[in-house]
Length: 323
Image (tube, rainbow, N blue to C red; front, side, top):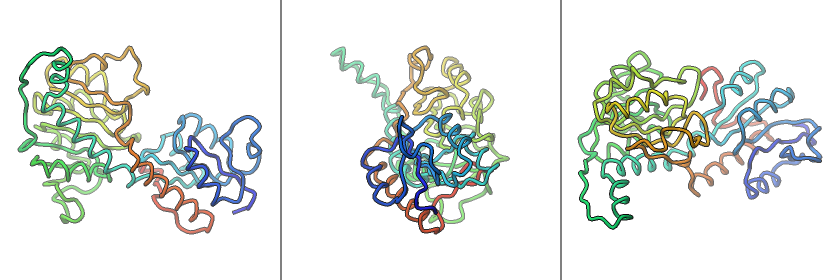
C-alpha cells in the first residue's frame, strides 16, 4: 500500500473517523469541498452510512480503489456489479447486527401478538379495554435467510416455543448439527420456497437484496401463508412486493406486519403502509444499538489493520452471491 494513498469515508461517526486516522498513514477524505485527499490516489473506501448511488459513482470514478468495507450486511447491487467487473474487494458487516436485529424481531412480533398497539391506544384514551392476545408458543415460524441475523432469530423463536423452519439458498434437509443451526427443525433449499412458506403463522424476512431476492415475496408467496399470518421484514424492502403486501393485509390474508425496511427510504408520507391497521413501522432501526456500533467499529478497524498489512480481510463478499 502506498503510504500517501487515501481512504474515502462515507458517513463515519467522528469517533470512528478518529480511530481510523490513528491507524492510516495516508489522508482521509469525506469528499467535502477543499478536502486535500479528494484528488489524490485512493486505496479504499469505508462505508458506515451513505447513499448507494453516491458510493457506486465514487467507485466508478476511482478505478484505483481496491477495497470497500461496508458496515451493512447487504451490498448495493451496483457495487456488486462493479466488483464483479473490476475485481474490487468488498467486505461487509456480517456478524455485527444479528443479536440486535433478532431481539427487534421478537419485540415487534410479541407486540403484535399481545395487541400492544391497541392497548397503548386505549391508554392514551384512558379506556379500560382488555384486548384479545395470542401466544407465540406452538406457532409455525419461518425464517427466510439464515445468515447471522436469521440464525439468531431462529434461536430466539425456538426459545419462545415456536416451531421454526428455515430457508436458505444452499442445501436443504435437516440441520447438520445443533451447533451449526440450533433452533431449526428443518431447512429448505432454493427449489422448495413454496414448501417452506406453506402454512406459516409467522414469516421473518432476513435475506439481503440481490438480483435473486428482489421481489422474492409477492402475491403468490403471501397466499401460501396461513390466513392471519404475521410478516416481519428486517432484510431489505424490495425483497417484499409492497403492493402485494398491502393487498394481502386488506384482503385478510395477513393479520399484520412489522416492517423495518422499505423499497423507498425514508418511507414516503404517501405510502398506504403508514395508516394500514396491524402494521408496525420502524425507521430501519432494528440494529440501532450501542452494541451494534461497537461491533461494527471493531470489525472495520480490524480490516483496516489487515488491509495495511496485506493480510486476508474478514467478511469478503462474493459478488456473484451478494454476500
